[in-house]
Image 1: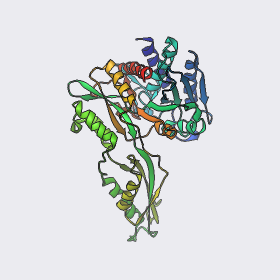
Image 2: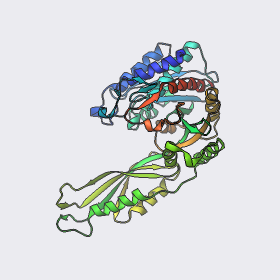
Image 3: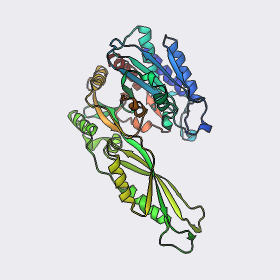
Image 4: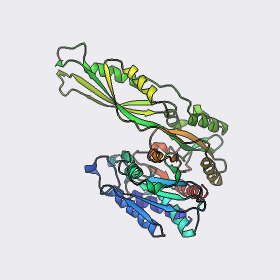
Length: 425
């Protein structure tokens, strides 16, 4: 291994071993994010970086450093990763979730793909540039955030709103979710880049009726009314919308020889980015079997395509009908970066250098990342963590899964490609 590759693997393993689980509940979160941030800070300062540690509340630290580029007129590029991870159910793991063990060429551990892999790559790249005297074209802002898994409240969102000067001059960002390979015919690969992300909100459905004894059924049973509404939502398929990102995906993927009818395990990811999705996730009604409750509620997880919030709201309200009240939470809007920006060409060149037949393909991520917070500052976000994996390895399926893992060779590939991207972008 080169020093870059060796350090990338070392840092990914070290970060996995730091338990930085983010439960979303302050009382159950320890100091893992701060310990991870201090680990990163120490290794950046070791090679001469000036760093800024931001800790809005104890235990929830992020760290940021900047490397000057050769072109002061070029917008700075934010390269960011989050240091927190989702909880684990240890009994479902074959390998210790914080052990960072390697078995048969696979590195296992919480955060192996989400996303301590990229944190390790970025840290190794930052050190290599400083150590080897490499001056990138653009200013690089290396950011390692807390709290992404719970919405970035104490991480990227807090920093954007309270310390925006740390991103002065930044125009673009690169982070999750994308960059991993999916198979193309002829032992070739496409590498997805997220150029857009769905918006996210939630809604509460409330049905009302008369409370009564369970032995005397009522015509306005709130539970029945709610159940009808939930079934209507669950069975409804929202129409496909041809966004700019979807059009580019179909064009580039098709020209590369890909068949959208044969996407395999990637099909659900791409499909979810083609239309709105609404998932009933929580039901609340009654507390005693022999009492018909007067109210029943359901909560919905809602992911919206760019620019179509109002039509979606009207469609949901029509689906549930007049007997069910809909209360809307504040929405986080969708984001969509230019699909033809020069940085896409940089990503393609970096992939081509390592995989001559590889093709970078834009797609719409149906979930959310910290790029949404950076968008408040006018920064266009792209999801691209480069991983070349075997054709049968489902990278997206590793997110939040038991026995989360990533091939070691994919990490080394990612470190090389990431360094090339940041040098040339």
